[in-house]
Length: 241
Ligand code: C5P
Image (cartoon, rainbow, N blue to C red; front, side):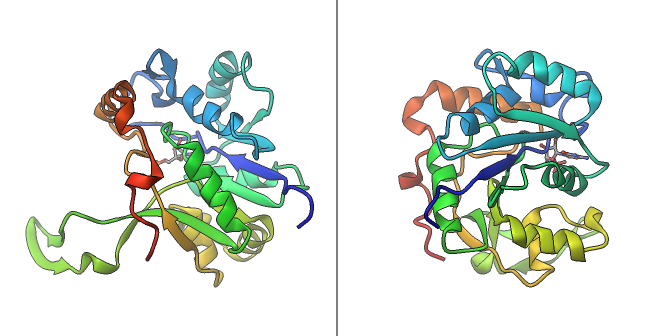
């Protein structure tokens, strides 16, 4: 490709955040004085390769996001979310700029994504159709039934996957034209896999966590308060799988 590719980013933000805190949308909770969504959008807006940012969200949240994002980011637009994460992402995909060549999908609730990880996903897309960051599983995993361990899982071939997940737009187009029940998919790696495209795993970052419970936010407050433990791919897995 001679020209820089047009890169769309989809930040699904349509979740209810029920596991987080019933009275406050988790994407508006503050970290270091700014809402979670501010940090996530800033990570992509400040990256020079990103062309547009699409945020699937509810109408209620859209007004609140505009209040947070309008002043500093000129490249985002909100689109209606769906009843599941996969449907929210599909809404973002169908509302992207048709020129987009690569599509990155990143959970809005992962505000600690580094520029280095975004760069590495994009670089790997030059040679792969689907690129997925992952980290090795370090805990021992058990299969459990009714509170009793039935067997221990072999963790040596397991990887915990993260976002941003990167795709060639035509790869997602094939998936959306083929797969009937999007609700069954919890990430787009599994969606394209169902259509025969295996994702290439690259090294993720242990601190690129998804905020699920309120203590996750306190963890990030701590991480950002200690810059020597800020995400740095040189401290992650070496990316050889
Ligand atoms: O529920 P889960 O933690 O897997 O959500 C991951 C991301 O997907 C979150 O950023 C959430 O806001 C988003 N989501 C969405 N639409 C839904 C459900 C979740 O955009 N219907």
